[in-house]
Structures are given as C-alpha cells and as structure tokens.
Length: 197
Length: 197
Image (cartoon, rainbow over all chains, first blue to last red; front, side, top):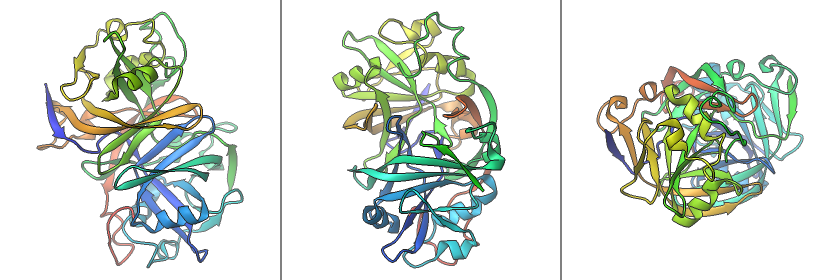
C-alpha cells in the first residue's frame, strides 16, 4: 500500500556536484548542486540546474563553461560549505584551503583535491521555473590516478562519491556492488537487445 | 596528478529509474534509464533522457506522461531486465511477474512492488543529440508505508535504491549516512545563506 508524499522533488540517489566557474573578474568559484545528471550520450552531455540568484548562474552565462568536481567522502564538509555561502562575498577556495586548477579545455576551474572532474562547454540553457538547466557538453573527464581501476576506467569504490537525499537532506556514501548491468537480468528473459530499449 | 579519461558520460552516482508508460494500445511498459535526475524545484520537475529507438520514447510523446519507479536492491534483476528487452515485442510485467498499477493522476502505469514512485506530466521535450530529454512535472510521489520514516518522509536506508556506474556498468547500493546537509560544513565558514548560492 502506497502513501502520497505530495508533489515534491524526490528521487534516489541524487548526486553531489561541485560546479566550478570563473566570475567576470576571473576569480574561481564553486557551488554545490544536486539537481542534475547525465542527459545525452552523443555528444556526451551533463545537466545541472541552478537558481538565478546563485553567483554561479551569471558566471556560466558569461563564460559559457563550467566544470563538475565530484567530492569524495573525505571532503563532505567542504562540499557542504560550498553550498552554504555565496561566491559573491566569499573566496571559498581560500576558506577551505582547496586548490583551483584552470581547465586547459574550458574557461572554468576545478578542485584539484577532488578525485573526479568533468570539463563542460555550455551548449543549452533551458528555463524550467525556479531553476534554469544548464547543459554542458563534456570535453574531458579527468581522474586521480589512485582512483583508477585499469586504463581509462575509474572505480567508484575508490572515488567514494556522495549521494544526497532531497527529503532528509543528508549525505550518504556508496555501498556494496550489487551486480553487473546488462547481465544480471538476462536469466529473466530470452531476448537481449541493449540497454534503454 | 590527474589522468584524462576522454570525453565521456561519467559522473557518480547516476540513478536507476524505471520509466513507466502506456503504448497506443494501452499496454503498460517499463524501461530502465540512468540519464536523468531532478531538474527544477518549482514546479517540481524530473528529467529523463531516452533514445528515439526506445519504445518508451513514442509512448511518452503519445500519452504526455510517464512515471518513475525506483527499484530497491531486491529487484535488481528485474530492473536490469527492463533495460535488456523492448516493450515492442515483450510484456515485461508478465515476464517478471511484477504488477502494473494505473496512476490516478497521469496517463501512465507504475510498478506496484517498487518502494518509491514519481508520477509525471510531460512539460518539455528537448532534443540534445542521440538522446531526447523529457522533463516531467511531478504531480505526486508515493512510497510504501514500510519505507517511511515519519510522516511524509521516506528513508533511503529502507528504500535501498540502486546507483549505476556508467564506466564499469555495474549496480551499487547506498552506503552509510555521512552527515547532515546544510550543517556539516558550517564550521568552515562564518556566513550561511542557503544551499546552492
């Protein structure tokens, strides 16, 4: 028996993205956002939704670029802080003693100490209501060598990313590996025709 | 030191959404998708991106509605199966012995046995390339009573949703609670001005 929880923004899991931008003066800024995800395979694109009031909103429109740095569990305090204060008034890198690195592909900085980063060129701006969705084409993904598991592949168990729960407003880690996709369900059916059909 | 992994669709975590629709004949269908997430707070909206080749693509355009059923770890095989075969040729509910329930709010079915479901009215269709992004306004979220933790609030530890890793193509569970959002980072800075600034 299901109970109505109302019209709300609730799915599990939602990511913890740290969005990196430069402002008009060239100062690096970061903010935390959980409304987003991958939205296209070719070209590879990631979406992140922001309110107009955010400092990052203007920065993305100005610079046509952003990065997403994925924090690990060890940096949960810094990731939370990035969502608590505004880059308009605060140098968040200085406050956290984390290091901005200028992307060599897009006009935006990322967080050196975070294990996985995604460099995006702005390709779409979509007004949805309180939030504006920015779609970025992924020009490169970069990972720390110590989170790699074979060439060109990251290991989520080494990255240790965070998940955010929209209703209880908490951060969770990633748990155990449950099974292989496009495989574990094969014994149910006969025909196999690829993911997402 | 960071290593380039190339231009690819890689962020952590991505969700495992089971998208429910009716076809033109009124037959219920479900497919699994991980390119999506929350995209707006007001109106509350969820985005999911699908390829045109999917049966669900046409169903959403026809019915202007879809649901998202969040599977728990116990139904990982069924969730994987829903992404392996096409609803054009297969009755996936019959094959898995799961139960379609007609939403009383939108023209789409959801999966009775899954703990959390989101009922969406189609509000935007955005062409991005290989994928088309469907933005649905959330009209209601419904949860099984045994995953609730107080009135109107679900508990992710009881829902036990899946996360998908795009690079290694595996399913993971959710791990331990790391900390409270909008709180755990407060000792870093002085000013607090709300999430996403």
